[in-house]
Amino acid sequence: MRIKLFYFFLFFLVLGLLSLEVVGSIKFQYSEARGNLIEQLEISKFSKEDIAGIEASIQDINEKYLTFESISFIKDGETNAQIQNHRNILNEAFTVTEKFEIGDYTIIHRYNPDWYFLFPLVFLSISGILLIVWLIVQGKKLYRMSHFLLH
Image 1 (cartoon, rainbow, N blue to C red):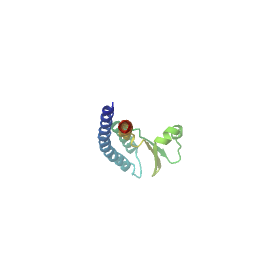
Image 2 (tube, rainbow, N blue to C red):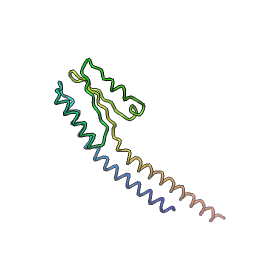
Image 3 (cartoon, rainbow, N blue to C red):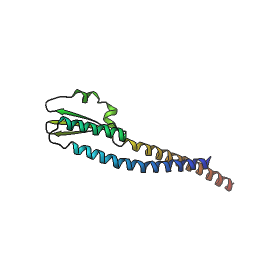
Image 4 (cartoon, rainbow, N blue to C red):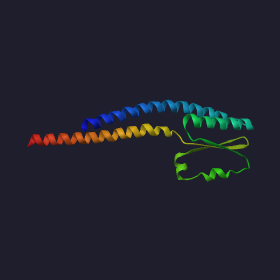
């Protein structure tokens, strides 16, 4: 059993480190895509085509990186009740909201940052737990051996 615990520890450690490398690569590509989106938002006056292009970019980012980004364009003087409807503890805790005021529009951009780091975190946590259990088992074995040798 002791050797199996150690092998499981190594398995989850390697899995966690490999997934961390993959996530780092995805994070870099995602950051570039978000940077391009932010550049699209830096237009002083939006046409319907600009808004459609930005919404298409959001859709593309959501599909490619499995994220949950959304954007709302609010023309000055208008209200948007939809923004208030989605506020709850979970949304507030795990969603970043950015507000841009550009030209005649207020733009609300919401997204869930870096959720895919969850996988390496879980794998590395399991690995750490298995290491602790393995060390406890090894400690008990050493204690029994030293107890046996002293008597």
